[in-house]
Length: 208
Image (cartoon, rainbow, N blue to C red; front, side, top):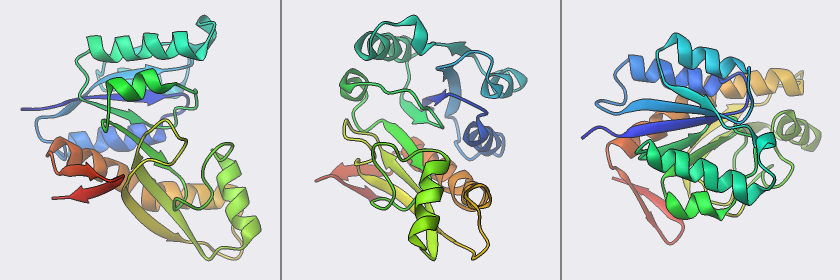
């Protein structure tokens, strides 16, 4: 039985693009991206969805007066769409436990570092890579984890290391981590979920 995947975006949707490619290549079997939700209007991720005939909608954070009201609307929308798996792909809007409680162990996020390094509050986008470079790490990478109420603290599904080069800037490191890690392990984690191969026990992920 195929699963319905909803992808949440806030920008260009490069990770969404990687998921769409994986779907085209048959990686998800009978499962499919059935909905794209953006927290902002007029972002390129919505074009990607449209170009691939994937239903999309804008649920703008500015239209709601609180995180709680926004989170309820988001959870309701996901439930009404019969969503099985939620993927946060560059979704930069804060949501509360209403979403996590209604989709326990069914929300995946990709983070552009090897958790527990360079993660948590304030570590997003280029800030992650600036911090890694200022620390002088020799490897960084990406992590796909299950989302829980605590920021970047959920059970880790997959990780992939990427070499840090001496002449890297935050921008070059960001691009290499996307290409070599994020776009590889995010589709792989979605595939594992769709094949029912992920088990969570004691805050750890076991892959069958």
